[in-house]
Structures are given as C-alpha cells and as structure tokens.
Amino acid sequence: DGLSTDHYSTRVSSAIAYIASYDNNPKHLLQFINGIFNEKFQPEESEGYKPVSNKELIKLAKKSGIPNEIASKAFNRQYLKWQLLVNKYTPDRKELWNVSGPNKGSMTTPTVTINDKLLDMNAINEKKMKVLDALLHCIGLDKKQVGVAGQMPKVSDTSSPIAL
Image (cartoon, rainbow, N blue to C red; front, side, top):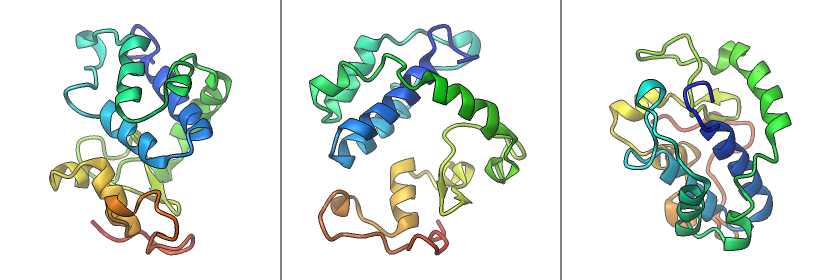
C-alpha cells in the first residue's frame, strides 16, 4: 500500500483470500491473479500510480469467472488485520528474498513458494513466461488439468518443485 494512494495491494490481496474462501472453482482465482498481474491492468507504483477502483477490480473478477455475489464482496479488505500481521512478519524471512535479478536480497511481490521453495520470479521474466504457466510447470500440471477431479500435481507435498 505504500506505493499506492488507494490501498490497492491490501484490497487485492484481501480479495484473493476472500475468493479462495468462497469460490469453489480454483480456475477463477488463477485467472483473476493472472489478470491483476497483466501489464495492461497492473498499475504502476509510486509517482506513476493511477488509482484502481473497486468497480474495475470487480469487473476483472467477474471476467475471470468469479460469481457476482462473491466479486461484489471481495474488495472490502475483510482480511486487513491478518494482512497487517503477515506484512509485519513476512519481509524478515530471508528464505523469501529474491535469489536473482535486480531485487536480489529483498522481498517483492508476488512471492510464491512451493513446498517452502521460492519460485524465482526473475527467472520467470527472463524466460518470458507467465506466472501461472511457470507455477503450473513447477508442480507438474497442465492448465487443462486445474480443477479436474483426479488430476493431481506431479510434485508431492514433500518433494521439490520441478525446475523452470
């Protein structure tokens, strides 16, 4: 939130938690996350920041398949207290710091881990991959398998992710 004027980060991260809790179709959430990080949607930070309304976020959520009754309630920052605690604790965890690129040694968002192993966002950018595609590759799933009964990741809950 420090680089926006309208609490964009906490509204979006709270919405992700809300959608994950109330929408039973994981494809919707994955599409929404992919949408918020799309360069045509994600706002610039700091001086170039332009506010993003809840109306715009709800529109993106519904476009991602999230039902209106969930999308319309998702951006009210219901998880703010939890987020503040996470934000206080998480940046101090060195295992979540970037391992390569210009932000090496610091934490940035998105931060994704698989079985306690950091997904290297810089490597994803260098390979010109989408975050969703990289995540699915690392757990051994194809997009068509997400949310399909009986389709399980090739990575178990104790194994390391598949290298990019």
